[in-house]
Image 1 (cartoon, rainbow, N blue to C red):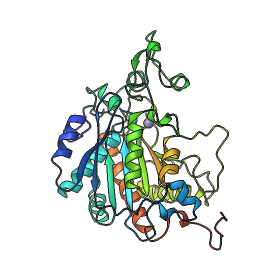
Image 2 (image 1 turned 60 degrees about the horizontal axis):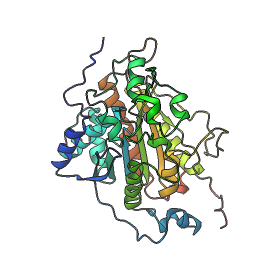
Image 3 (image 1 turned 90 degrees about the vertical axis):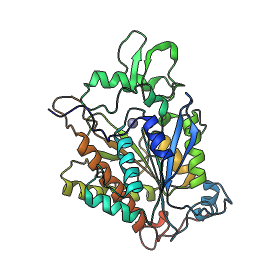
Image 4 (image 1 turned 180 degrees about the vertical axis):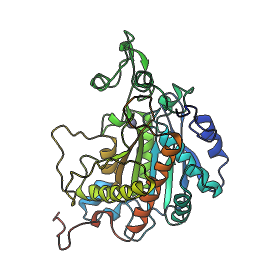
Length: 368
Ligand SMILES: [Zn+2]
């Protein structure tokens, strides 16, 4: 029976994160906005960012034939943005980002495989990183008594994550998404998916942003113009996997597929399971959205700044029989591998434009 109590250095509390950021020596910490409930969105950046002169919006730069009029050009230092807990209690990624901050601040490997830690330190010399450990602090602060979902049964987990209706019944899919924003008069308990305004930030009213958390995130993205944006989720007891983004150009899927391949190789070596959710996709990434695909936060972020967007689902170690259950150590190891693979990919592809990655030779650019 695995211990339910997280280790001492598993850090997911907002005040603890604020204090660590305030004391940071190497990273540049700040508050990039406030939630609907008034909580700070803490972020920290490692490495310098040399921005192009902002001459165009991203989509205008693309229409000009050169995305470099908005964002990084080939050969410039890559920039990776990673945010966790956009669903407030999906804290596996939060703890892992705090392990990454610890590594970058002290040089000491915590939580990750030592080889991955050393690789991350080397990679940090060539990649700028912006990290947001809790992107939905309202959801997180609704259950400060919890540091993880590990060991909870499915009913208890769903009550905390998705909430409860006015009759006391626990909310679940699809009803929890059928009304949005959540109407206060219909619920007894608001789950951690939502900010204090009842909005699940993944399903904001794109392109019009309703929730202040997303407004802050998009402001930050426009200011920093990252090349890769990784969103970290916990997905009950799924096998860890990357989720293919929707409504993005083929090159974004090609980058995703390459990172997925590298992560599969890493996972095999580390003996941690990874589901290959790209196995069915064509290698050139030329897929059309399915009938029921929608334009979510990750699609919107791509179209706002041109970044390659990635979404990772981690197993949460719930007490559900006959399902895979990771423990704290495995969750941390898995994220260390993910961060390493992503940064290695960012460095390996820094010499070329994002859109030319994996493109078939001789393919002509589209006419304006
Ligand atoms: Zn999630």
